Image (cartoon, rainbow, N blue to C red; front, side):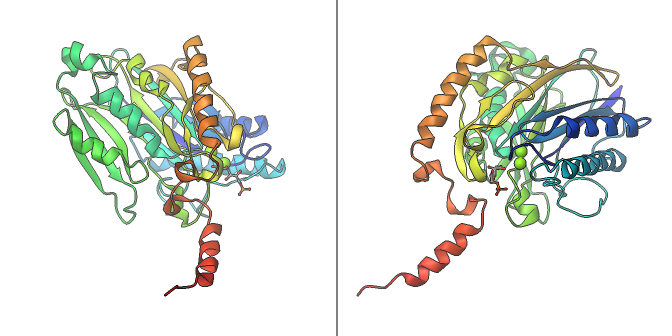
Length: 366
Ligand code: F6R
Ligand code: MG
Ligand code: MG
């Protein structure tokens, strides 16, 4: 059976700043999808990571389907009404356009979708990150799909010995999608050269070279490119089919132990370590640190199992402690050097005005 997994995700308001959506808001989105998804979707799961609400649904309508996207858009509109009534902060924040047109891409919410012929057993992971942008997946997925130091299957499994194709998108190019396909292992250095710059080049998808089947799909929107000004970080979601011809679940999770520094954190304008957290985690220290959660599922004829929380294990408690230390270490230097993002990536316009004003006061010395 050919099915589609769609994740549609938005920040439409949260309690006490940018911490977490309210229970009433989550319930409203859930209720809306339950009522309006009849005859459209097979199954669904709603959740939150930090201040973002994600709808994961299964259906047979393919990617970028107008009806699926419209249903999610309307669910976010309905949620926004609740957020406004409760006085939640940033109500409707990610809904950047007034009217729905065709699909939700480019309208503010993040989208990741995968269409595939179901394998007899079909495990996948749904990742959601908050207080960061889509480049946060560059390093972990590079390591999971291309580096035998992290993915033992590249050496041990004949199904994976042909390697993987990385589709990488240039997110600065906004008129049209600008993408490149590169193969590991032979294009490894080119892949690394692009993925080094996660603010510009972002993994969009990954395919098995032995079967051509797709494993990864990542939301690649950059909100500041849609709105032209700061409207929040992109807080990307990702779908990863695992096992068999793809890396094992544990191989995909392994690189997240690094807690690598990513763009985001307070005001979307700093670098902070990406912390793998339990499902439905909130946001705290310095509006962060950037977090990622993972819900693993199996799916059969579009029916989802309950989620298994991939970062809810004693091993990750130790990792989180270490990553907290990394967060403290970089925060100790405040605005200085790499603690704050370079000028082009600062998410608030205020600094531009400040520097223009100061520039006029500079004097040229002979
Ligand atoms: C980051 C984020 C927060 C806000 C910060 C200030 O993605 O959402 O760090 O940037 O809390 O928010 P405002 O400017 O809305 O008061
Ligand atoms: Mg927010
Ligand atoms: Mg968010």
